[in-house]
Length: 487
Ligand SMILES: C[S@@+](CC[C@H](N)C(=O)[O-])C[C@H]1O[C@@H](n2cnc3c(N)ncnc32)[C@H](O)[C@@H]1O
Image 1 (tube, protein in one colour):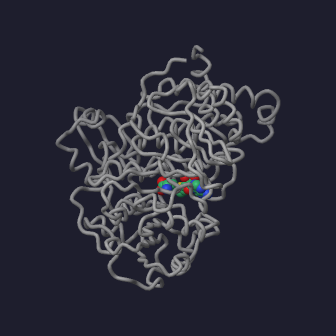
Image 2: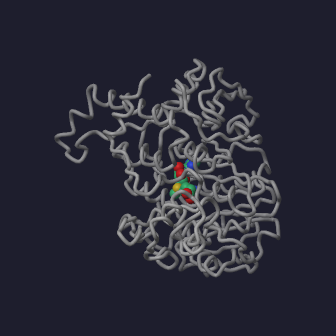
Image 3: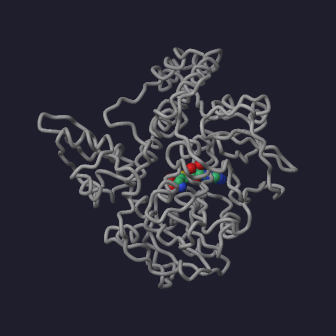
């Protein structure tokens, strides 16, 4: 198979501080003879107790089946190959087959909304044939790696795959760069210690939005992102933050890194999902110099709706720190500070009960006094870090007098979760056709700065969104493309 030139990056195929989560030894990489994708390494990582696959630079430190799991409950949404099957494919020098096995989520059964009529499509030869067609579709997409965007892969996974996947996931991840939680996160990240080149661990990194921001902001940082869902990591590695490193691992209380491997550890919008919260926080502090950990967006159990059963009250999260120094703030305060142009105010200690009325808490701990301080004003808008790109929350309509951009929440749940967007995002804009064309092509215009300020444009990775107006593929269209593709 010949692959088109893709997004190539120079990178270490895995974090140098990596160690086996079970035996603690440093694993040794043996690359496969065939390396099917430009700029990416496939191979086997061996330690005294295990052999782990490395797929396109991503070590997969999981045992058993590498399913795609629901974020909150861990329920299997898409069955994946087992770690042993991946190792066997790599030993047989079939690295591309290993990647395809991880990325090819089966298409939904036809008539999936009609319980009686869908039966023939859920058993017999159909599911096998449908999965084979999806694998060919993924191979065809991989041949176009450099021409596609993160959006194309998000749509494949969330819009054209298993009907066990939550419909909200696509707007939730695609729209991340303009959401209040992301602006608040970028403000919180101003508190990272100013240690020059020290890498930051981003645990439960999803599609790598934080990793993009830390690569593109004025004061850039290398990031190692860890998540259990491989597809998300791979899209992060190839499209969202291609200069950063990623590791697929699911044991938050046995992090596969050396002590003090990172300048700081971050966990954004995920810690309150974990069952093993004490073990996880102990581990985050172990791997971070000066025990610097930023827990971003923790659900406060005092306020409904609960984001799962493991939420705690503010004092409950603080109790996990075993007496280490800490500061608390919340998303609303960070967002207010962001809009006024400054970072987190962490100098003054507060009582946890002062945050009783805040749903989304931020807990920062460090032995480095520079972290628990008031962080000053921004010199550049954090949400502008990256290539100016149209915020997906805007619908585009072409008229005789130019192009109309209208703010439209994609769903009721999205509107509920992101209502604060209305405070800082333009309701609508009109731009002339030539300006719109320049904006879509990423060329500077005299409207760019203003549209960035009003969050009509957001800084994004270069290959994040398809150009507005280009149609998404249908399930059938995608599968037919795979079938048509010549071997
Ligand atoms: C709500 S998403 C947040 C993703 C990312 N931090 C962001 O803010 O965009 C939660 C993430 O936690 C990950 N996650 C949940 N439990 C995990 C575990 N035990 N190990 C690794 N990742 C986990 C999920 O796969 C998902 O990507």
